[in-house]
Image (cartoon, rainbow, N blue to C red):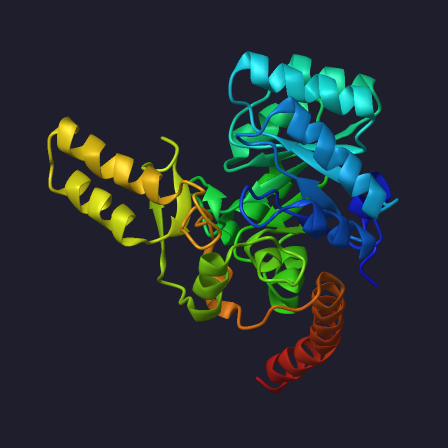
Length: 325
């Protein structure tokens, strides 16, 4: 029922992509998502070439289905090494985020037969990426976890759909069948989810992160530059809130630097129970379980199908009201 052009493009069964996540998005999750018919995506942010090679090999040991690698443009040398590795190892799909990877990077990947999907926060970025030759874009609203823009999903997706001719995938604030159906109503041909996949049995999210998701409210995240220098939506920890208060109060730079170091120290992976994996989206307020990935996707699609069946009834009811008037 929900087979779309993005399924044909990426060789997947259902139009769902797993957003790449530094915390929670390890090999087991990526393989589980792909085995469930969606597209699992490996992160590369902060990793090494040897780690990327190990992860790609590990995913292939666990699934024969298509999967992707996310490349975050972080400096020419790092990006080029990631691209070269993906080309050498024949990765089926590469997603790009945070910044424009550049036409040369896109061309190198496509010349190797790799499908390229770029995450975009604004219409102009989507138009530019289409001009550079990407196969599809993910219109990601500011509800999403991780690096975000300032436009929310509801107004962003239809404007991107109207501006480009390539397939558009919706992301940001999507975590169940209702969000899935809403994305299609906006003109998208698929969805990308990150935070929702964090709360699954196969995720490697640490104990602190799992506890946050189970207790989270929609108001428990914050957008800050304290983590990476770019705008990131994450859990509003005490350290981040202290930094943001200092910024608002106009503290001198040396004092802000101390507060920023406190944020980054709290994210250092000294053990599996610390706060290193805190980039999460506003959809966390909907999460209250940790199903297997396959169960999550099956339930989401079943819910979406049930919701879709209501559309003729709704349209008919509205038509009757108009006629009666």
